[in-house]
Length: 107
Length: 121
Image 1 (cartoon, rainbow over the protein chains, first blue to last red):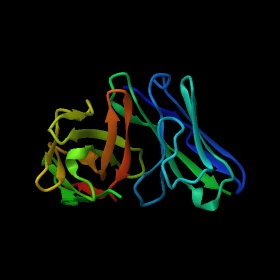
Image 2: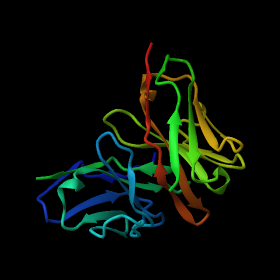
Image 3: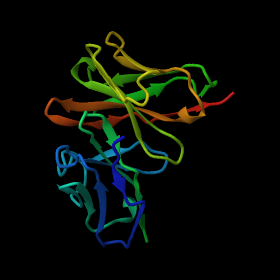
């Protein structure tokens, strides 16, 4: 079955930049989406269609995609950004798939 | 702002059927697609399936033989039934709105708070 691979964890100091990658063979043909999930809460949509930001999402969150890798960038990380981040896309049959998740720790 | 709320038993016995309902408010259910996602404790997210108000469905092939999603437009609700459950089906179950089209990879813009369902005797 199709998989989206994320690095398990990223540690970053406040004010620095965090980059989270998501790798998948179908990403050149499918959009990537990103969700933030804090403990005990439902995921929240952060980025859609590779790089679009829903209303209400801070500008420090941005997305990009090139080839088989999508990237979520958090510029000027804040303590409140400590969370699990999940990428999501679809395979060639339009079956939705989530990434393995990346835990972001703010030092 | 669309609101979704899951409801159903928090404990299901092995081999029985897990049934959940999602109540949708501030949005007419006939305007969108609606889906279910689950997350086993300490693990990642898994898409289960979605339904359109017309009844058209799409399921994750890994669960297709056990899963049924239905919609009740009169109550503005949709439901999930997963039969022959095992401990591996223990998870937080989320209902979501799905944005999708023939030219767009679908995604999930509104989520319920989630409900934990434990499969145990």
